[in-house]
Length: 137
Image (cartoon, rainbow, N blue to C red; front, side, top):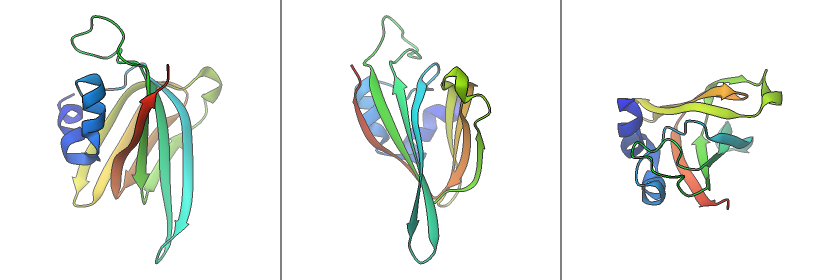
């Protein structure tokens, strides 16, 4: 779990937005993936980006007293490669066990969304950011 705590500061651009809403960096345990998109664009070569929207209520708060704000957190993974997507159990919902973000080397990051049920995603990419966070109430 130590990687999760430190990864937001060093790996995820705009991570302070999530910390300001929840007061900590979530593991996203029991959160739900509500949207997953791949977007292709042309630069000097063809590039694929991923957008992942996660519905989170702060249920993994280490100082749990009650549910936190119900929000959609949108992650952007830029210039992905080495993507492993398991969609074999999408019929059962998209519940997260935990989200791990690691810096592998300069401009190489790993986005590892481990599922309890449904979509499982592991991507290597050049940048990871919080694109938006907004109320889902």
